[in-house]
Amino acid sequence: MLSLLPTLEPQYVCPGESHAISRAVHLSRLAAFYPKCRECSHRQETGQLPQPQFAEDDSARPSLSERSLFTLEGVRGVYLNDLTRQKAGELAAAFASLLWESLPLTGRSDLRDANSKRPIRRSGPVVVVGFDERPSSPDIVTGVAAALRRMSCQVVDISQTSAPCFRFAVAHLQAAGGVLISGHGCEPSWTGLDFVGKQGRPISAAGRRAANSEVGHVFNVPERNGHVENVPHDDGRAPRTITLDDIHDRCEQGAARPLRQGGMQRVFPASVPYLAGLWQHFHALRPLRVAIACSVRFVRETLDSLFAKLPVTLDWVEIPQRCRDLLNVDDSDVGRLRNAVLARSADFGFLIDDDGANVAVLDEIGALLAPDDLLSLLAEVLGAEQPGGAIVIDNAARERLQPRIAARNRRCWLGGWTQSDLWQAMRSDAAICGGGATGRVWLRESVPATDAILTLAQLLRCLSRNDSPLSQLLTE
Image 1 (cartoon, one colour):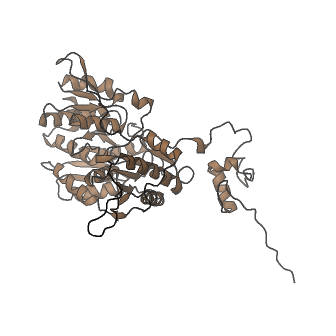
Image 2 (cartoon, one colour):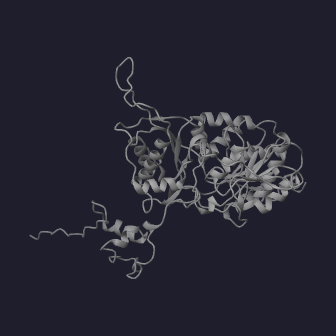
Image 3 (cartoon, one colour):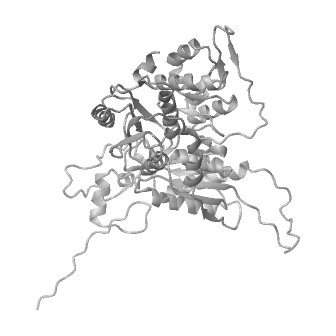
């Protein structure tokens, strides 16, 4: 009787890992250019792959592991290849360490409660966490929340949400900061982290491009003053704002636990107060038909709730979750929306990007509005209601927008390059609106907010003031 001997499969263990993986996983990682494969002794075992995935002479090329995950506005990377649960936890711990340093001093640490005679437990910073609809987000948010609790932070979980609702929750709860797991602006296989400070302020990079963006300089209408005035500079007494550069540096150094005890975690339904706050912007609207497209389920459900009893009809256009160019007339999603506007005789088309803030607007004949046209139109309406209010524009739109706004005899601020710059500029002079070259419109709320739903509300108000079509309003 013949006995079958077991066939021994080579043990594939990635560099730096302790557990073995199967040959199928090994080949999949090679095909996906997994960064650790460059250092693996088995990288030449490519099976049926068409060619060696890593040549012998490619050592001089920068590997994926050497590429910085930090962008101008957050952290982005391919899920598992670049950004894992562990890496996300390290970034969250670095952010928590900076939040601890920004807390006010509490004096003596040996104070005791009068009733129990026990030492008073110091409360850590409150940090809001949320995530988008990508399949990788639940895994990443688990690592982020665990790292924040380990850093003795008080974690508030608002679950699946949009970026505008998330920033609203940070301000509404008066939290010290927030971490949103989101890969917006990238393909579905990517994920990332967006950091938010107090009052919902976006945390951006402070690199050379942002530092040289003339943030805080204001140019007034030439007919009024004929010269450029500067905003008084910060006297240094206010606490320094956390930037992405600080998070990067602290992550490289490592973050030590501030306390021995861990933090608590609770759940908060942020969508309830968020929806309640949106109602005040939808009133006195005439019957209109809007062809609208958005791949974010949270945004679609919010809009359906808002428009259930309004005279405005929303005709939804199905679009996939993908990286799109809202300013390109040849983008496939812009084309789908244009066809829907013409086929359904809509008053205008409205496309909301995956971040819930950037928008593309098409008039009733399917023509794509430039971002400066949209901002100028909204500024005209809001300026009539709030005379004297300033308008903030980003540096990229300075040459196009400054003459148009100056011609209307309105004050205009140069906001900078980043979202953090624009937020601060909006906050400094209580500007009525802001924006520029991206299609993202900033509006004045209790704190500056950039929200596609608020932008839609203001656009509906513009069209409800008279019976003129959108294309005619742009030429007036």
